[in-house]
Image (cartoon, rainbow, N blue to C red; front, side):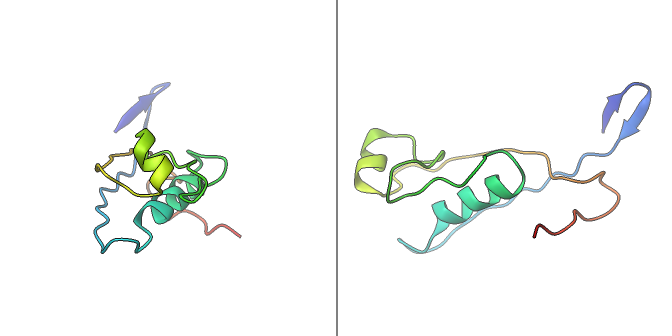
Length: 87
């Protein structure tokens, strides 16, 4: 719960682990999720080395993920109803 000007606002928290084979699109999916909830203006590209979660120089140059990453964000909506789908 987050208190704001005397009102209690529910925060929706989602813990999500993405596990898949090599080159299955885990980083691309993560970038898309971050863009969908407004953390990023647009998803980064593995091929262009512009992803948020691949931060090591070697990861960016090789287009591979070497170490795991953790990202956090608040889900859109008031916590009482699901967020509206984007168009």
